[in-house]
Image (cartoon, rainbow, N blue to C red):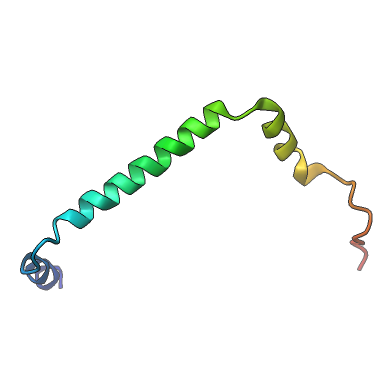
Length: 64
């Protein structure tokens, strides 16, 4: 099965650019995410991390 796919892909002109583009998108996304994590404000991170524990929402009843 893999030989069929590999042989078929080798006949397509210009297909070698797609793995390079995929790697660049992957690398750029995680580099930007890495930079955002280290430059995020500590107050924002604290606020977002406490959201699941925030019980201020009294309008929703969990009684079954």
